Amino acid sequence: MAKTKELSKDTRNKIIDLHQAGKTESAIGKQLGLKKSTVGANIRKWKTYKTTDNLPRSGAPRKISPRGVKMITRMVSKNPRTTRGDLVNDLQRAGTKVTKPTISNTLRCQGLKSCSARRVPLLKPVHVQAHLKFAREHLDDPEEDWENKHFKVLEWPSQSPDLKPI
Image (cartoon, rainbow, N blue to C red; front, side):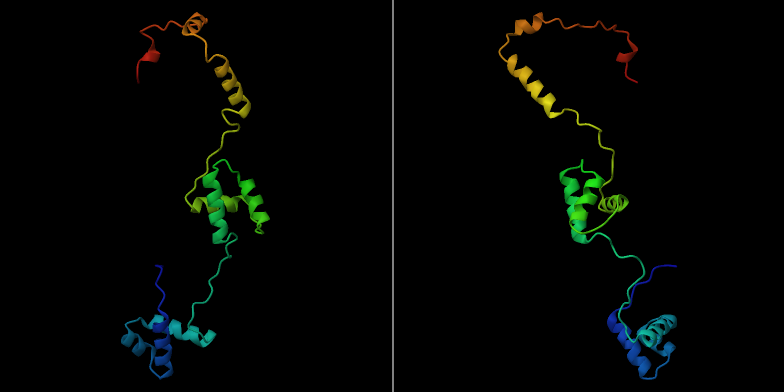
């Protein structure tokens, strides 16, 4: 079935007022331009619940508040390497108990798709320091020293299949 729009509060109140005035469902429908079944459903709802307000719908309430959603979205945007476990722990500290799949679903709804992070970063701080140390030591070396270093140059045949684009 197609999803229908809800009637405005004014329209629902008019239906009830006309019903209490003694009009039939089909007469109310013709007057307001609605189907008889719509009018009947609103009258039955009013007789059952004595209200024309929207009733709460079925379904579980959201585990993560809109504020929590913004928080985890911001954290992941700032640091993409954040794990779901880290986010679960942060939300638990804030007082919300959630699971890793809940975090994944929330981030996916926010347009953040998952990807596997590298197991280790490409350069660790130790490697960066060693690289800088080497560069500083050889900063003042003349170019001739670099030419005298024994770098092995491999001969590559011109007819090699590796040189031909596919």
